[in-house]
Image (cartoon, rainbow, N blue to C red; front, side):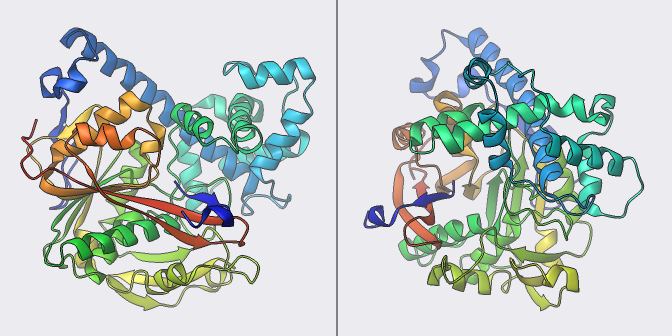
Length: 458
């Protein structure tokens, strides 16, 4: 995941040709497990019970992730209200610090506790305005997406019904930003319990591009034809840097295609990209994209300023982003006026036809009979505890052909050993600086694994 780095530490349904339907996803069986994984359960019955618990937990986390985006949108968007935006982390700080000491302690320790204090006044007012806006007809595409997040749930029509969701989001943000900020392992544990976020940004593509550059250096003659993207994401309403002058966008499938073609690792005519996501709305969005002309509007999540400049490498990446898969076009004035706007690209139809999507949970499922040359999972593995991670890596390995690569950005301790046990030894790791002030640079780590050439597919 993207992180900050102190300067002193810097020295260290029908689819296109590319994809599968949900019916083609195969549930992992106890017999599929490697011996080191299988010994963690007494037998097949216990393993199947565990998978059912993962399914139930995943369903909860998808709902909570959607609600988190709804809260972030309600606090930040400028399209449905004239009230000033509220930064969610600062809101959480004010909310928690205002609680009586006994409620504060219980709130931070007990995941189920909802304080009696109720909504902060300013936050409730913005949520009430959003509820009003959702009840009116609108042509705003992002507002329409937010409306789908609450479709069919009458309880969401009341601002007070969303207060428990606000409290849950505030607890997570307060713990992350003001309690565990200096403890990487504690932050990691918070993500393992958090709702599944669909956040995405072009910054994540820079690490992928760098990792693919490493792959090309290792194997200059390598060609990539089939790519699996786990969790492509959708920029619905991130915690910071919300851009709501365009419809929600999924950047990663296009950024991956762009990087592969720009680096001469793939040809446009042969490339096929299959994106899987646990959130059905992300899958639906990508399927809709494949049916129509696509223009991508690129926004950076961070601004390039004199005090916090982009790194030279990231600046060059952003300038070239999308040029290998489309043609530059002018954006409408409201889009171009945003200070984080970079440029727009009309994607060639051959690229959109090469991208397909299906719903799948990589912890409990793998593609049946499919093999890929490359798998990419950025800002995804952090949501899994170690047991879930081991299963996900095992399933990814089973979907890679021998000699295929996995690229990700998860840096937790023990991952190398888990990956090696899944026949995915590490080939290379690097850190790429995106930018920011010298005292606290924003960076992303890039890990490249190669499936053992002689590995036997489970």
